[in-house]
Length: 101
Image 1 (cartoon, rainbow, N blue to C red):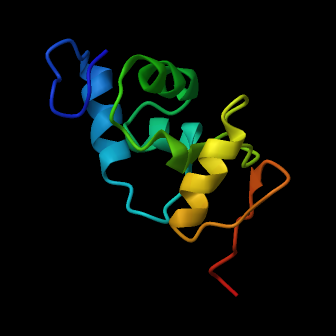
Image 2: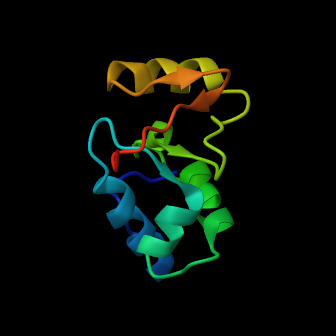
């Protein structure tokens, strides 16, 4: 497994995904699909999940599925990490706030 400082085994797509994920700030939440789109590969959301499964050291807790669901089997840890960053979580999902109101 490699982390943010060890990119020797990264594919071109891995580099793009890593850059997007590392751009997320505390309190930011994105979906796998949003990360893929920002990396220039819309529709590659599963590649984002595989990337996070293979590489340690990235803020995985800031990424949820399209419905805001937390990572199955890691819900408690992810909810705690998100709460520490001021993100609201209820029933295993991020509570998205509409900033346009």
